[in-house]
Amino acid sequence: MRHAADDGRPGPCYTSPPMRVRVMEPFHSLFYAPQYVALGLGHFADEGLQVEIETSRPGRTTVTGLLDGSLDISMGGIMRSLDLADREGRFIPHFAEVNSRNGFFLLSREPRPDFTWSQLRGRTVISFAEAPTPWQCMLTVLRRHGVDPREVKISRELMVPEAVAAFRAGQAEFLETGQPMAEELLSAGAAHLVASMGDATGPVPFSSYMTTPESLRTRPDLVLAFTRAHYRTQRWMVEHSGAEIADVVAPWFADIDPVIRTRVVERYLRQATWARDPLIRRPGYDYLHTILLSGGFIRKSHRYEDLIDTTVAERAMG
Image (cartoon, rainbow, N blue to C red; front, side, top):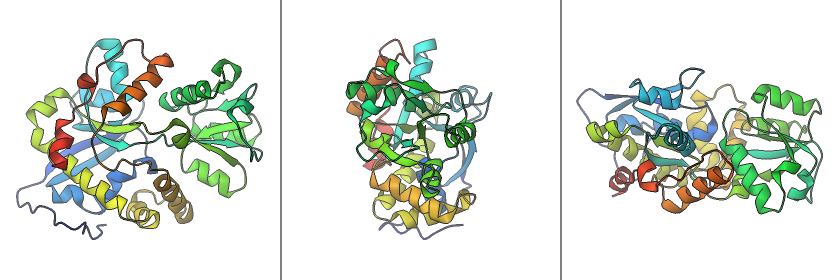
């Protein structure tokens, strides 16, 4: 399926065989809608790229796939590169921002129109178990609002389906989850939204594209073409509605009810979840670095210049 890709400028015309680009996402999620918009609008194809996307699985992750050479580019949090740098002193640079906000939501089983973070004291929050950044952001938000995280029971043992089932069964007062689970629970009247973690955390480079230093050195044309397509997509998304975006990505998320799919995209769009350009800026990196360092996820400081490559984004934007 290909939609009209008119963003005011025609895409390049390529006659040579497309370059194959193997990409991995950590989860298959509407949170990563920009890469599916790029596919749906033909922006990757216009750059002469044949993009193949797979989702990580146990034993094969966004980082291991890059390190063993079976992937060209991965989507993920900078925390994955920080973790590798912390443990092994190896660097996987990030070159294009995708998500500029936390994509999770704090739900309550009871309405809390006057919610304050102090209401979490002595309560149980079932949090996202599959990745550490949402939990680390929660710790930062709690401390910012004067709540010692040790006063809150944060459970991270259950995978998403089991976490939602436990919340529905009354095993916790709060659930921190992503989409479309949050929208489905709200629509069913099974939960009440008390906080967007995107708003509570504030702007932060939550997800971005990364590759190896070798790829940046030996395949600069591929990485640049990929980033140009991504930037073109970002400009298109700024100018279009949530309903239009939801329509473009529908073929890849056919299992989500169309009404829910549109609500998810509209909510993400309203809170500026998706980056407007690919440049990963130092203040955002510093903020995320502080979140992960203060939460104990990393133990050492790591330089922006070692983990972030801005040259590709700057060329694409230029």
